[in-house]
Image (cartoon, rainbow, N blue to C red; front, side, top):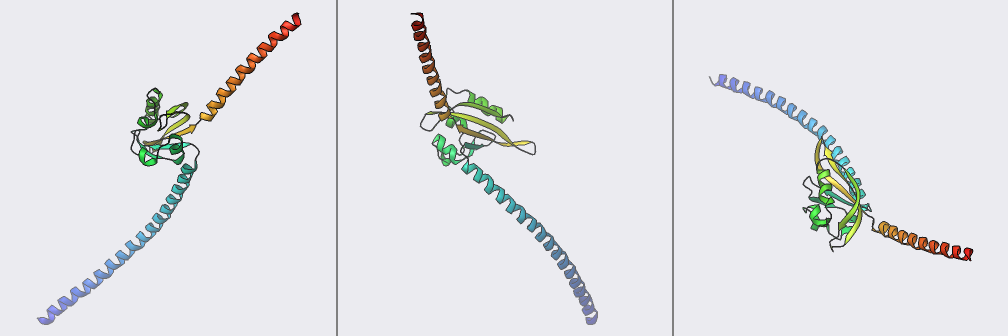
Length: 196
């Protein structure tokens, strides 16, 4: 009897050893497949980091103020130029509604612009926006939605400070008026001289 038991146990041990080898081979195959997938993931992660560095460099070095917004018009991120133009720090802006921060009460277009982008449209216009100190700044605003798999995931607003352009236009208009009046007066004087 003892011998039979031993055979029985010996058979179980052999069977367990064979099952162990099969399980070991399956685990080895799973590990190899995961290693191959991990290499792919590591490569994709590296590419993603590279693209992130490129885009962050573009944002940080842009002369235009760039806001990244969620679908509820809340500020997610503001680049350095936006902070310079409007005199805010990024930490002050995060989570704030953009129109509560830089839209002046007299500029009704801000809410219309936001609604256009929220509804999937784009904008491109010149307007005024308010700095932290309350001074109005002339800006050109370009806005558009971010779309991923046919779903809007956020928005972008780009602000170009055109104050110097507006100042130059005003100066040119003043010069035009001055020279127009100067020539008009010169023509009158020469007409008087010619008729005398």
